[in-house]
Structure formats: structure tokens, C-alpha cells
Length: 467
Image 1 (tube, rainbow, N blue to C red):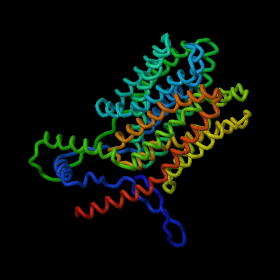
Image 2: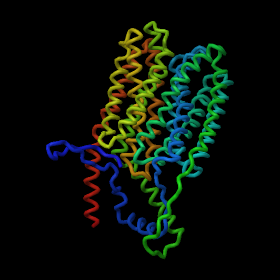
Image 3: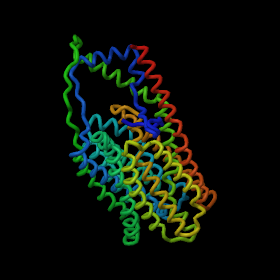
């Protein structure tokens, strides 16, 4: 259960008071829904219990590898940005749509992935996503126009990655409860390692082959490893709950009532101001987040630096440290995870906005380290903080909505940054705007503790009214 610490004096020392972030939904207290709950309670039910270990750690390893293989491609797409501009003789704005569609579709695939997970399960969803992503990367190698690359290298590959991505995150979140933050932090560390591995690898392959198309074929084959990883995501064992009351209702009637309740709860998610604020924050996050990954090489060359691949390695190493370190620290019961999340976003935003003033390699490397560490922190905590804010059985739907918001931010951010670079010739303004967006995304979350306390008070008042 997540918490936001409040200060209370006891024996002269400050002591944290737990404030529950996911109280009973006001929707469940409505008279028409109490009938649903009563009917559902009449039958035996099953529920999964997070093992917090065991096979769960194998799932964490698989999640780590999924992030290494997929995010390594995504975060190294800046290498292909330059290739597309040269190959198809287009502007930075036009070429940036490939990465924008890739990242945006990856996140917007959240609701579809959530649906497939419920219908097909984790393993089948991972296999479908892997085959789609691998096939589209293969097709990108033979695409003869940028428009076709938009479809294959952007939308198709992004959709495949999205199916794989949510499956990995969802499985870790379901396998862990007490150690969820630590497990998630370890799992998503794969992204940082992917950046470290793929950056030099893609740079080397571009030199060896002299054509990005051959590199796409190699990446297409590497992604197929995710099929094997998909078999690690085994469904949790269900525990049978004994019936609590007798009932004359048929099983079909109860099932209909369950579906009706589920539909109402989905609507309630979009009416929750806490979740809406969180979604808007994530939108602003991704408007700025991907800009350094795609345009770092442009900014470095602008200052006469040729060490762009080295900067990407610095980001990757710092990202791993940030994900592991902040993931470990945020797992402590006395740590305010939401505050850490907000702080990472704001620091990252300030550093990104100031990065154009880094006129030499040491300063640029320091920025790369700060960017990598802070992004590692808030990426690790995105799903963890969300799990603190919503009930466990609503997490998958809520995560799908948050990923869709991230996708919308990606669609807007990179093309706009490309437009700014084309217009101003230099990358400075694009990085200034990206930094401001990141800082705004962190600042707006400070209202959530107040909204949570308000929601808790209203829920308690409605419970007392019902009683």
C-alpha cells in the first residue's frame, strides 16, 4: 500500500503517518453498485496473491532483458535520424516523425496491450508483440520512402514494442507487492544497459556495413529473443475464496453484474482527478523526455564535439545507476516516493533547459550524467507511484491510460523539436523547451497529496453516511 508521509510529533521526534492513496472508490458505495457487490459475494471467487519472490525474480530478469532489447533500439534511434535525413533528403522535422511514431505508438499501445493481456495472457501477448516488431524492423530495411518507414519503423515497430513493454511491467507489478519498487527498479534497469550496449553497437555496425538497412536486419533478428522471454511470464496461481453467503442468482446473472461493475469502474478511472493529473504530467514528461536521445548528437556537433556516442554511453550508465539506486531507496517505508519522482522530473528539466550552455565535452558529459540519473529515477517510479495511487485490480487499466498519455506526449514532442531545429538551425531552443516541459510535469504533481487527502475524507464521509 502506498503512502504519503505526514508529520506528527511523538516523543519529540517527527514520525511518518501513513495516508492511504487508494481508499474505497466512491463509485462502489453507490446503492446500485452495492447490489452488484452483494451478488458477486454470493459466489466463490478467485484472487491472485503476489508471491514477492521465488519465480518472481526470474520474471524480473525477463523484464530486464525485455527493456534492454526494446528500449536499446528506441533510445539509440538518434543514429537513424541522421541516416534518414541523408538517405531521403528530408528535414529534421520530417525525419523526427519516425522516432516520434515509434515512441508514441509504443505508449499508446497500452490500452490494446491491457486488453490482450486479459484475453490472451502475458506470454501470448509478448509473442504477438515480438513477431510484429521484428517483422516491421525487417520491412524497414527494404522501405524505399520515408512514408513507408513511418509505417514500418514507426507505427508497426512501436505497436509491437508496446505489447511487449506493458506485459513486462504488468507481470512484475503483479508478482510483487512489498518489494514492488525494488523489483520494478531492477527490471527497468535494462533500458540503461540497452542504451550502453546498443549505442556503440549501432555506431559500429553503421561503420562496418555503411548502410543503416543492414543494421535494421540485425536488430530484427535480435528482437526475436523476446519470444523466449515471453514464456517466463507465467500466470499467477489463483487462490479459491469460499462463498460468504447463499444466493439464488444464477452464475450468468452474477457474471453480467460483474461486467456492469467493471464497466462503471473504468469510467470512474477517468473521473478520478488524481489519475487525470498524473496522466497530464506524463504527457508533459514525454514532450521533453525523448528530445536529448534523438538530438544529443546535433547539440554536440553544434559545439564542435564528435563524442556523441560517448555521451550516449554516459547517459546509459547513469541511467542504470539512477534506476537501481532510486528503485532501492524508494522501496524504504519512510521514503516519499511521489516526492522523489517529482524531484527527479524537476532537476532533469532544469538540467535539460541549461544544456545548450555546456560548451565543452566535460560540461556536456556532466549534463548527460544528470539526465541519465534523473530519467532513470522517474521512469522507475512511474508505474510504482501509479500503483500507490490506484487499487491493485485497477492497475492494468490505469497503466494503459498513463501509457497512452505518454504516447500523446511523444507524438507532440519530437516533431515540434525537429521543427524548432529546422527553424532556428541550432538545437538550443528545442532543448530549452524540452527542459521546461519536464519541469512543469514534475511541479504539477505537488497537488496530488492534497487531492489524496481530499479523496480520503470524502470516502470516509460516504462510508459513514452508508453506515
